[in-house]
Image 1 (cartoon, rainbow, N blue to C red):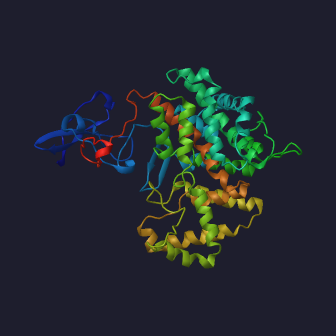
Image 2 (cartoon, helix red, strand yellow):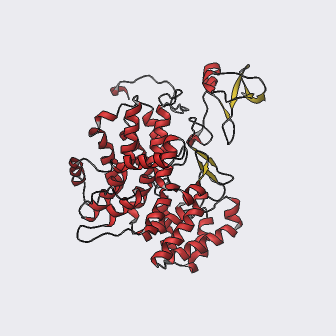
Image 3 (cartoon, rainbow, N blue to C red):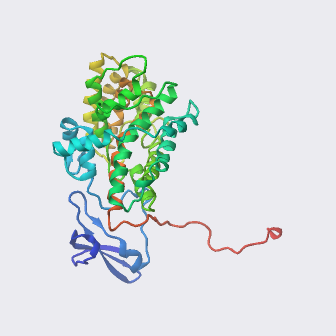
Length: 446
């Protein structure tokens, strides 16, 4: 098979006028076809390989989908080489600095930043859907007290569909919108109750006068025996953390949500599938792993020894919180997260020795040719674990908080897919490497 560029145009109805004049010509066993090149708003061009199987009987092989665009999306743009992350065109740095999480949620769900009236109406809808059906409390009692909060999240969130039958028809526009609001509103309550259940403390009901992240902090940390007073600095810090984690293109959990939803499954089941995928240590558990690494290093004096271990291919130690599957530059979220981390520790008067280790580790690694040549820059997980610990959360809750923040991304991606006329049930193909055809042999002859 040979591949080369071409100049003819193949107009296909579903290309939405994004087909360029360039094509890629593929020759296989004497037959040549042309594959259209598609232009996005930004980022690299994409070759439409749909005709490849129909015309030549070929599939593509791409483990981990590292070079495959599975969908068209208007939500999030990442340029890993330049360290760029944008939601609907807005740089993540601007949204974190000037906006709030619910404003970002509205942007991801509806395409534009809200005006004041739109924001007030959206905020009111979210606020008035935060309570859980009282019978759902029994779900929590079915788990062991030492159950991981993510296990509880998966079970309880998936069970939401059994309490909201009227809005699980994915073909109904109004039902999709109601489901979107419910999922976004109820996730913090589900997460807070998972935390309270593990601690053996009573559940704290949400309060309608409180903002989204303030409400969540109160449900996690207040107790009935004393008054709870909001700390605006901590609420704002958590709000920024949620903005930074709201969406991140076609990552593992988002792709899981899309794949599950392609079958027409109800939205609660699809997001529950996303929670399961996020639970993996290579995905949502990375900040916990980074914090554990810093704790293992322990002091600045031990950093050189651990850096040498990280360079040793025969040593299982890895430098957690550095490098990223997509970013080959400084993770733009990490810069914001570093600032948030300092603000929280300074506000609380915490002198965390792990921060000193983190800062020195970052400084040395960024000056070391070994790490620079491999694009091992700090990512968001490097500082988020320290920050979440300072806010009072145990490591078991780190991935839970990630899930709360990412819910809006999963929901927005789910809506986009359901409303996409090109969407089909997901069905990846494979390169079969098993035995060739074999005839069955009766057991007494084996």
